[in-house]
Image 1 (tube, rainbow, N blue to C red):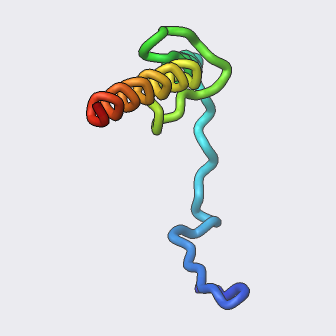
Image 2: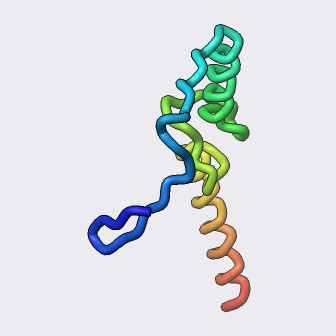
Length: 84
């Protein structure tokens, strides 16, 4: 245990016993590339973006904007029907 700036830290392993990271094999690189492609592909419009799809939205930003507008239109329609 060590103390730094009033905080206590404990290492979970001994650095002297740590092994180097195994190198990436061609199969692992292919798997990683497929995984990243899936994270960048929107499930709704099937386009591939340059960024990972946010998990909070579940779709690309363009689809999320379209969904937000559709939801707002539904709410306005319900509000108008309730007011009449």
